[in-house]
Image (cartoon, rainbow, N blue to C red; front, side):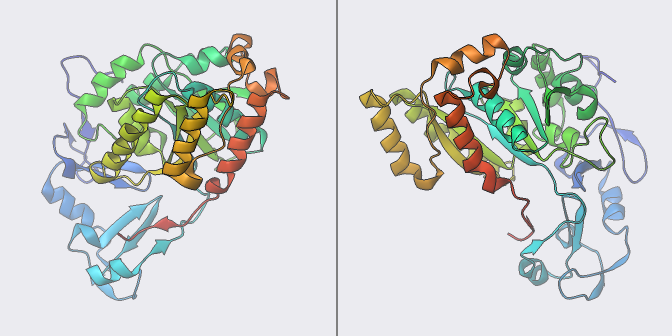
Length: 364
């Protein structure tokens, strides 16, 4: 239900079922890929001690839960620790059931670096490789939908604000590829996000770690979620970065774009330190590379020197890449033999190894 301008959004306490307005961080707890709301510290203690006695996940000792650090939930897996020493000893825990979707944000503060082109063609390339992909447009300009010639009846706004499911709102556009579109309504979603105590984690709460696919077999979900971010540091982008587990940074091969990379790295550091979410840099992607220009070659050398193997193979400047959106096609459909198609195929191959499901890190 959409909230009026003068009514603060309410949540229901997981323990006592009382309706209340969350105002403090402790009132929002992440449990099994969703957010649990707790109205008071009394209910927090009751929730914490719910299982009564439990067995330590490390040493097997039976004990009673007393402190928040003694229980951790990641990707639906709950682990218990009788002491801080046991928590430190547990380095990894493998989740049961289907692996969570890998989540890749395509992000840069600077505009004109090829973010939407990269997001669309990365998603399309992954889908062609056999992975089930959801492409999410996190930019209110709606360029993803315009590039593919689609307009969703329900958009990311409806998922964030009205609680619509991704399966309900996503549009199938190609085999293995669905798109969750956006439009100018996304600006209103920022106002909604600002009212929430967990305002930087609403996208993660709404989408979850495993996103069901409409009209698919039970428990089937996407393998990869690609998020096309706006060129800004907004609440929407904070949500995208807190949801993502990896980031690809397109960088145009010019001087000003090189300067902007430092700001992106500072943003990712802030997400890790202040928003307490481990998001890693998957790679810096040089775009608009023209080997005939000195500035392009100098920029590529600088990126290789700074990032080493994290500097991805460059995307060459290519007329076909600019033309493909006007035909409402991906580069693989519009010009499969072009340099643009070859370069984005190289990007898909370079990222492929990072998409293998990994053990969930519990310590640290």
